[in-house]
Image (tube, rainbow, N blue to C red; front, side, top):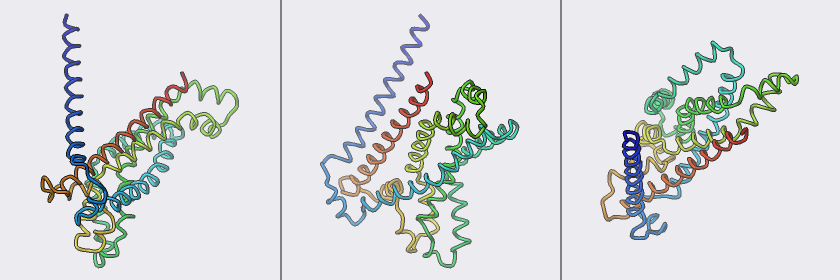
Amino acid sequence: MAERNIERVLRLFAVLTALILAMVVGFIAKQALLPVPSVASIESSSEFRIIPWLIDWLLVSAFAILMAFPMGLLTALYVSEIAPEPVSQVLVRLFGVLQAIPSIVVAWVGAVFATVRWGNDMAQLPTMGLIAVLLAMATYPNLVHTLLERFALVPPSFKAASYALGASRWQTIRQTILPMVRPGAIAAALIGFRRVLGETAIVLVITHGIALGTLAVETCKTIPVAIATGAEVATPGTIQYQGVFFLGLIVLVVAYLLNHLAQCLMRLQGGEWE
């Protein structure tokens, strides 16, 4: 009887969670799409430039993940397969601490560096490049942690069989370990990309903190930052108000697609060896 009651409570919480999520998504979609907007009408607003923001958003996020993922993969490979056990344990703990650092701290470090380097001529600040580097720094520890979990899923028996056949360490890594980890590694890259796409603090600090009032503020504005800044001035019933929800819907859809694809790839990695 007690077990049935626990199951009912858990089922109730699951249903309530699903209903709340559906209500939130429905509210965002309603505010974004009703009345049906057109891209031209939103673009005509002096406050919204969706296409340029979308391009900046994707470009700076792509640059960041292209920098962070190779470093993360090489680091995870070293920690899991090459480093001595004591060194590996220390590095695992270190990256566990690093991934808990808030992105606002990374933004502060970037702001200090930019102020020291370009303080007398902030208009020359390479905003997109600096933001991409800071985003890569912020997501790098999380990528390493996720990739370490993927490497840990490789069965020891597969590596032992490779060594028993006379393969060297690097042959085992190249021909056995990396092919097995590939789906999970791609999934980790997608999860990192999703995290970078949703980052707000770093972009906001660089573009609307240290660079406010200079030409640099116009060189990069991502969708999350556009939502954060647009929500301050948007009035219900205006195109700006609807535009903020439209941008939120874009972020929601992209994040869901990336997460769904990453989950499929993670299941693929596990299923390849069953």
